[in-house]
View 1 (cartoon, rainbow, N blue to C red):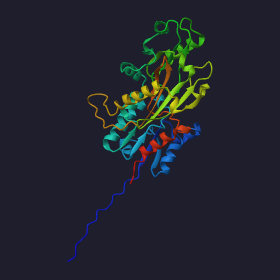
View 2 (cartoon, rainbow, N blue to C red):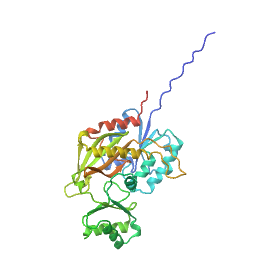
View 3 (spheres, helix red, strand yellow):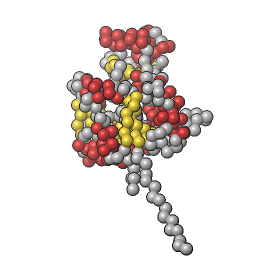
View 4 (cartoon, rainbow, N blue to C red):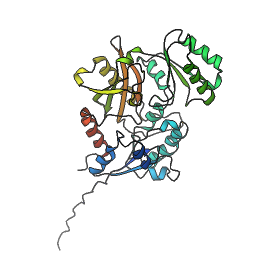
Length: 342
């Protein structure tokens, strides 16, 4: 009687199934932003063997069960999320987090706790407490104020030096205003205050000391998988305080050797600070599994040989993957979505 030879079957790894969340229907994004900076990323991941889908997180037909079928979900296409200051956090808490509980192998990039923390610029106060340098800031609930009381707060905050006003939940310098001299408001200053008092703001209103150094350029240090992969400098147009292209700003790549040591060191420490946020519950009753921190952009200026943090973008940052120096970051991102399948 012969012997039966038992040969274990090799398990073929499942094809990665990747979802890019969008705020607007995907077809609208290409129409509105044909040169969108992350446009080619889904296609590159698809070409490397993954199933890639783009779906609007506001689609009422999507629930936790449908999201749990993916191997990874990312916010990198989630522009304009801040236009939905209540619905977006609710979606993360009530849909994405339960999906991850249903499927513990589901990775969400970036981690939901980091994303929720990063939606509101109150996070800057935590960074100040942790010892990082941030422009002096004050948060004001405009719904509790009149024009007279808000004017008093502004003048008490900054007697004679310029200050920037912006919503705590915002992006791309939207609804941001520079008061150049709080001792005498211009008609534009008055109109801005009247508008925020009448219409409100997404989150509280931030009063922030204006940093003159922004005119020399703002460093954007890009991190992927814990590595500082490349750096871009954003430069405002002469006479402008906003760096974004829609306000005439320009950009240039900064060689690694030319990045100020104080900026590189501070940004690396800030990345570690972000990592400490991964998977931490918001309260004692919530327990989250968490996903690795994958990407972030850390923006700041140099003042008195020190790095001044302006903001952290860890939800849907422009990572300048299209830049000549962005190749390493692009490879790192692709490896996250398509791990070794041997």
